[in-house]
Length: 224
Image (cartoon, rainbow, N blue to C red):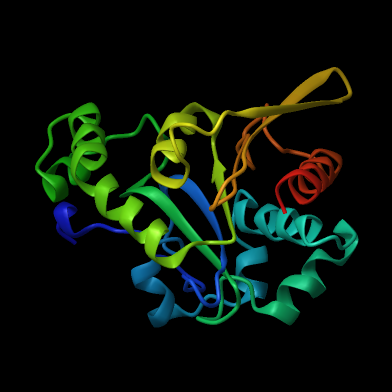
């Protein structure tokens, strides 16, 4: 993949203005054989397989989408199977990322990544994607008009906003506590409603069913 050709892609349904889908967008593909969309058609991307992935990112994504749609979190697996979430090109949900390289963590920049991209540093690579690819990705949002854009990872809030929202739309902050931990959800209403949520697998993120349920309820009630 040439970086200047990179655009939103991923398992699932990109939707259209006539039949919009929900996009769940992370930061970058994990360093796993099953997360790159180029491998999906080759290896399959069933809901059962997604629920078995190490780390639980897809499983928690299904739970969040289930709660956003108003179903109990205990029904998430059945919900995901019935709708073939991220597993069908017309399922109504797309899984995608801001940046195209596979990296074990957001700080990782391997020799292989340097060779593939031609960038010696990750900072230079990210700057290039922002300056070149984000324009195309922004145009895709305008064309496909997702009914909801979920950005996963609050450290990249400004990236999600620049792609999916409008400068004049102000952030609405929603907070809640789970135990002694405060969770913050950033909401941007508009033509494409944007919710920026904590990461689904990090220690301080949406790491419990309770936090996922609360986040889904807030998004459903305040953006949809």
